[in-house]
Length: 295
Image (cartoon, rainbow, N blue to C red; front, side):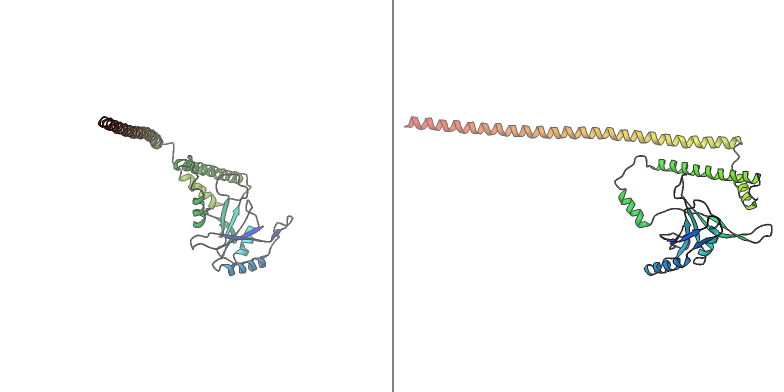
C-alpha cells in the first residue's frame, strides 16, 4: 500500500497535512512487477484541488518498515507530479526510541568505475510537529495537568538518553556495514567510507592527559552547579514554608485578638445598660415613695 501526501508549507520545507490511499499491488514471485493506479491518483488530486487550490503533491510514504527494491521505481512515477518528491518510510510499530519516520529524496549516484549513473535515495532531515492551531488546542487541554517530573532538567536528561540510544543504534549499523565489507557481502562504497573516516577523525583524542583533566574538571563543575542549584532550591522552599507558617500564626493571633476585643466591648456595653436600667428603676422607686409620703 502506498499513500500520497499533500500541500507544501513553504519553499524551504514541506509539511504534509493530508493523505489518501492509492491502490497498489505487487507480485510475491516477481519482485520487479508492481501495479499502481495513477489514474485514481489524478482523479483524487483533481477533487482535492476543487476543495483547496493550494494543495500540492509533496511525496509518498509506506509502512515498510524498511526500503524496498521497488521504491525507486515508484518514486520515479511520483516525480511526474512533483520533481522534488519526498519519499517517507513510517514504522507503524516502533521498537526503538526516536522518530518512527525516515525521509529520503531521490538523487543520481555517479560511480567511479565509469558505469552509468543510477538513482538512489539520499537521507533527508525530518521532524514531526503540529500546526499552530493543534499546538494551542493541546496547551488548553494540558493547562490544568501538572507533572512534577516534567521540568527542564528531566526533559534534557530524557532527550540526551534518547539521543544516546539513537547514536548506539547508528553505530551498530556502521559496524554491521563494515563487517559485511570485510566478508565481501557488500561492494565497497568510497563515499560512505570517506564519511566514516571523517567521523573518526573528528573524535577527540581522550588519551591526552590535559584533555582528560579538563573534561573531568568541566564535568565536576557542572555536577557541582547542579548540586548547589538543587540545595538552594530546597533551602528556599523550606524558608518559604517556615515564613508561611509564621504568617498563618500571626494571622490567627490577630483574628483571636480582634474577636476578644469585640467580646469585651459587647460585655462592657451590656454592663452599662444594666447599670442604667438599675438606676432608672431606683429613681422610679424613690419617686413612688415620695408620692406616698406626700399623700
